[in-house]
Image (cartoon, rainbow, N blue to C red; front, side, top):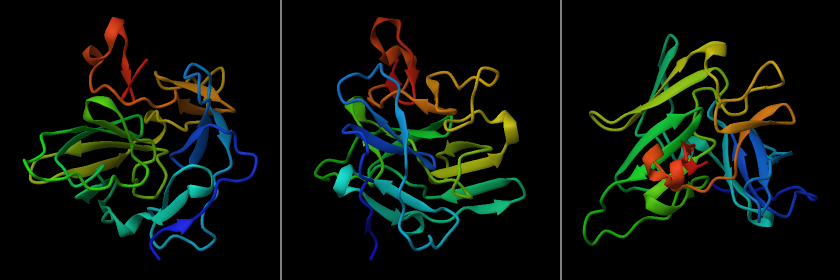
Length: 219
């Protein structure tokens, strides 16, 4: 069995929800400006078979989780540097990807004529301009805390993560009045969470009216 049904817990807000790192957040359905809410993140009762952990997606009763190792290779580590070859992408098309504060943002390239797109990998949030964002990408130990990652596209796509300690400001960081959040996120219940994803930008100039591109969305 490669997908385990793990429905959202009763009482989860009737809105759109997603995993953010090892947390789970819900956003109001009609007001992107409202802050998200932290909710419980249910997981399968059996342990994951690798440090990568579980990858989950879907809403309400349709939520499922998959062992991350089944769709992406493990990281190979040497000291504080870990590399994942052929990292997770939205589908089997041509993608350019970058990391921002622990989130993965990918931009679609031109698809070969006559090639139909595959079903998107669970967990990706895709929108306009061929932009997809993953708020819970793979990390060597399954947790974005303390890692700084980037994508390399020479000699095949690779995701490289290096230990950076407290200097790596990420989504899901603990926060308070003395520990602010990364630009584009806000402190909610003591953790840094992004605005509701609306993927539509790769760079700041993609956002109209002088907006800024943060985590693939214009803010």
